[in-house]
Length: 392
Image 1 (cartoon, one colour):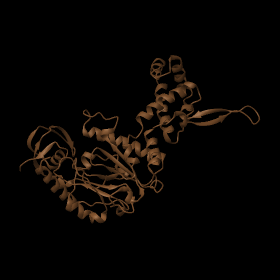
Image 2: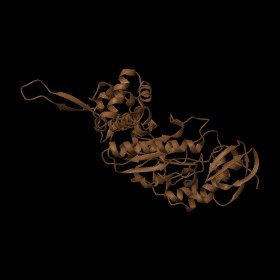
Image 3: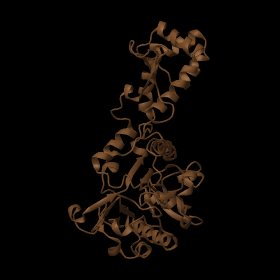
Image 4: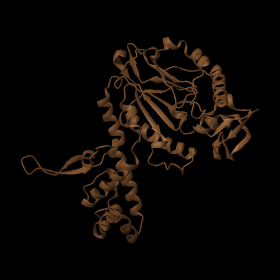
């Protein structure tokens, strides 16, 4: 990045911070703070091990320093400005989750557009929230668009704040579906038998009310509901695609789907052994597609620094946006995270990497060379390294 570009972005970031209202996190004085300035040296320089006492009043600091990136710690400490982690004396930490589009198995780098990557990341976010709210019952959640390639979620329920890394690892394994055994998902219900006589038999059920069992049951029910409505030949062909299910067993599964679908709806896997076999194959698919592909080290690290909502992301020029739960469905990061400060003006840039861009509801196809563009687009291109500031 050229010095002219760096100076321009730092100046315009300062204009943004003069108008912005930034809300610090709870217990802000107990957290470590860090930031990356607009330096001319190669790479980036992190300034960290700061407390709010060191920085001064937050909004004044942002106006004065106009940083490229701003972070605060998940952890709370007795001495957040101590120069080593051991001297800080850790007390507690938010449980933090980071979803990054670059790391999603559903994203094809080099093929998916930035907008497509962000859309897939929001789908993953909704799955993560399903785990956190429904499976764990967490209430105190703060959700934010990261300003770059994904989303952050902070859990601040009292029961998680003092968890150490090993306990946080167990939560990671659960939302990722790591080490989950199919039989561990099942409930059993005794059927038949009387006191003093032979032991009763047991039916096995997939839970229909929560957890991974519910996810597997929902997928199994949809699958067999679709199979039920097929003719025999098509149903057998479809079911035979599952490993270990031949024509005879496929026909049995089709008949159960047609004649005893109420048992499928109840989650009963004991109507015929093939039903459990299908459920096991479906469970494998669910574990591959319905997990939350979080950045695992972020969640297990009790000292992690994370972006401050309301600040700007120096790699995109977009805002880190705190989001209410009911705002997620309608939120479009390439519209709603564009700072108003950068809207309504044109600037000259030297495009160094052309190609398509979607921003603020418009689509652009840029060629290399000097041209006049809307400022919000120019800031985005410069921050992402696709343009330099031109002469006005």
